[in-house]
Length: 221
Image (cartoon, rainbow, N blue to C red; front, top):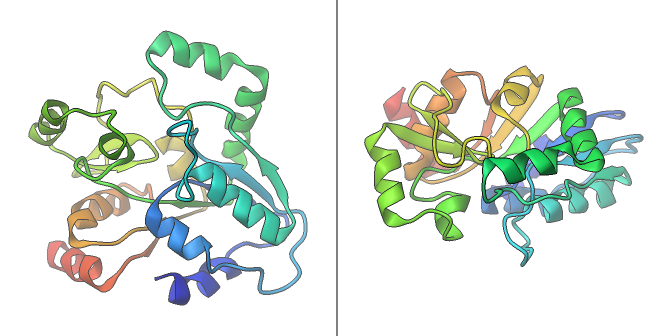
């Protein structure tokens, strides 16, 4: 995926663009191969979601954003906050902070956004032990099929109210729908339903996916 998709995604980063970058292992594989196809000036890169844990991994948004900003010699806005706050009160305190508020508002200017897509059983929450097994079963029973930047969606791409609502610090679904270009990078048959929902609602505009995921997606369509 990285080898074939990276040149196409690299061409999408235009001079003067504002680019938001989320997290994910598929997105990591693609950004690892990306490089400017030509001289590209004044590009702003924004970390699209806060830090998942204190142990920063190469798949995290902070690292992927830093990588692209360095290669494009662009500006880099870090979101100095956790992706998930303990409660809504903590969330309100964080987003009221001057630096965090500034970065969140800059996301309104996004020309291009790179995101990953998960499902309830394969999301940042479950993989990092934020979700318990009974919570996972609850999400499934309520018809939740996908997760994008910490926001859970149903089969029509509508955001669902969960225990994480109003606790996620990062780009929101309205900002994604308003952005001119949102590229989802994902793979696997188990993500197809989530991809279909995100595309149907206009959350994502373009897609990088592997053969298995594409075959399953075509069956759904």
